[in-house]
Amino acid sequence: QVQLVESGGGLVQAGGSLRLSCTASGNIVSINNMSWYRQGPGKQRELVAIITSGGSANYVDSVKGRFTISTDNAKNTVYLQMNSLKPEDTAVYYCYALVRVGPALPGRVTSYWGQGIQVTVSS
Image 1 (cartoon, rainbow, N blue to C red):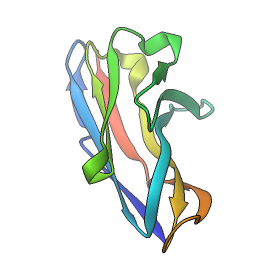
Image 2: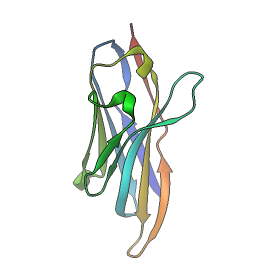
Image 3: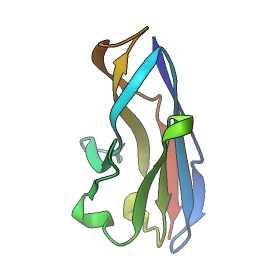
Image 4: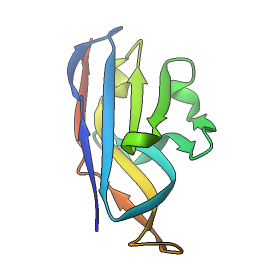
């Protein structure tokens, strides 16, 4: 019922920047929150950043001051601006959304994952 499509990944040198985008589409009544997770080689998936519908954001300590999460509510899109990238940021990044699905209120709250997008930071 809801699809999340990510874009913006790729290969970048250490110190560089990338901007990830994730757009939700489908029978969306409202979006409670959206977030980015990542899973590096041989590591568990971890929460990187989360933003609520009210605009409150939180980050994992390792990215604070370097990454910024934001949304365009009109487009049901979440962004992750990643600056000062480090090799340890290399991972598959996943978009996650907690969505109230329709066709109308009250709807039903369901979680969705994007397909994942590769970010590789070379030293």
